[in-house]
Each structure stands twice: as structure tokens, then as C-alpha cells.
Length: 195
Length: 155
Image 1 (cartoon, each protein chain N blue to C red):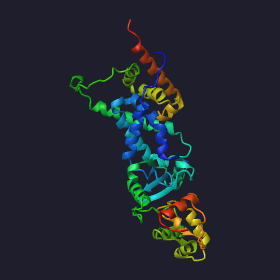
Image 2 (image 1 turned 60 degrees about the vertical axis):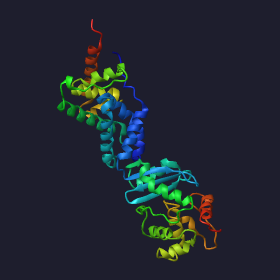
Image 3 (image 1 turned 30 degrees about the vertical axis):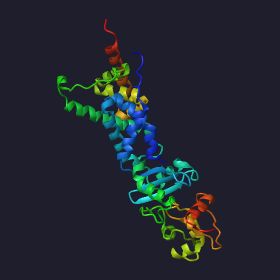
């Protein structure tokens, strides 16, 4: 015997073992890529709730979304689609016009005080209605901080479910959106909001 | 930065699977694989950025394989009591070789497995086995020599 080669393996066996592991393990963050009419979304949950919903083509792709979660939350991240079943179902119902409010719990740990209050106020804007940055700032406790409210909304890690698309400029102008203006328009149109 | 665990799992699943197939055989590889990554996930957040992830997970897999060998030794039963299991394919030549590796003395077995099935350098093997690089090299060499003697055609 002149050499000792590693045993031949079927890569599918290793992939199946890894999938069994991911299905049974309890990661700090579970994610899945979810299809939607406004494009593929990277959805991530912690045991506390939904923590991230990213437009896959707008945030540098799955890898960058996961890198950022690894730094901000925990590197114990696994792809575990079954843990995203409720999120996927509610998104499907929303896009099919059968759901106006989301019931999945939200994990707010990524935000500090003011930003969190702005986003929680945003989460309370009813389906089919809009509000202004100034109104969100006032509800968060500082009526003069509409610019800071704008920044907080720009840092919204859970678009669609925390409906920052319902926040528009005082003049009725749509201003910016994390997934691109065409998506803000698509979501407003879905909710029957004229703009 | 430590990569997200899923990426680590994607990168290491094949090397770990290959190492465990060599170490414990195909039937028991899955149990050891699950235990290896469970232990890895539990320790993962404490890893330092820039750690050698391949050598790290192989060290864990080596320990799980060792537990398996010890458990098997405790459960050892006479060969004729083993129920018959259907064998679908005759064991390939390399499978037979690795079965012989598993019968080597523990130090040689560990060094040969980590070096040739785990693809670790002698230095990494030494770190995994907590011995000197020279000792790791010698164990691997002696193990190979013993295999060569056993597998050379009988005159």
C-alpha cells in the first residue's frame, strides 16, 4: 500500500445529515428564503419572534444579511424553513389580500429606545392608511424629531410586517424605501392607497 | 468575525462526514455527525474570530468517534450473536482499508484517521491529540506501516 485515500462518500449523504441536524437543532436565529410577489425575502426568527425580513436583491443577498445577524445577534444561525412557517403563511395571506394585520410576534432587540418606539408606532398604522414622519416622531415622544424618525424607519429590519411603506412625506410624497420605490408603490397599491 | 453557523455547516459537512465514515463506518456516521455539530453549535459563540474551523470541528468529530469506539467496546458481543444484515454492495477496497484502520492501536488509529481521512496537517493532528508534532507524525507513520504489513499479499 503506497497511499491511503480518504473513503469515497456521496455528497448527498452529507447534505442529508446536515439537513437532519438543522431540522432538529435549536439555533439562536433560524432563517429561510421566502418567495413573494415583491421578490425573494430573507426571513429570520429568534425564539422571541420575527427579527429580520430583507429584500434579497437589495441587501447584498443572503450572505450579507446573515453576516450582519451573526454580528448583531448570534452566530448560531441555521436555515430551518419549518421555523418560518407562520411568517410565510401570514405573508402569503397578506399578498393574497386575505390578511390586514400580522400576528407573528416581533423581536425588537435590534433597536434602541427611540428607534424602537418609532417602529412600534409604525406597526400600529392600520392597513390601507398612511402617516407622516412627524406623526411617528410625535408618537415616539419627540414631535420635532421627524428626521430621526426617518432614520429609524430607514433602519427598519422588518419591512412589510412593520409597514414603513405606510409612512410618507407631509406633502404626500412617497420619499424613500428600503427595498426601492417600486416596492413601496406595489405595497401601497396592494392596500388600495392612492398616491 | 465567526461565520454564521449555517455557512460553517455547509463548508464542513462533507469533510466531517468523510472523516466519520472512515472512523466509525457508514452506519454509525450519522449519530456521530449529529453529536459533532450539536457540540460544535453549543461551543460556537465562544470561538475566537480567525480560528481554524476545519481543525476545530475535526477535533470534535475525533472525540465523538472515540466515544463511539469506547461505547462499542463496552457493548461488545460475540460475533455469532450479531444479526444478519443485508449487504447491498460488496465493501469497496477503500472501505476494507478503513475497517483495518479502525482496528489499529488507539494512538495510531487517531493519527492516521485525522491525517488521511480528516485531511489535517501533522501539526493540526498534534493539536487535536494534545501531543507533539513529532509524536503525531510517528503515530501516523507507525499506523501506516502496520497497515501495509497487514494488507500486503501473503506469500
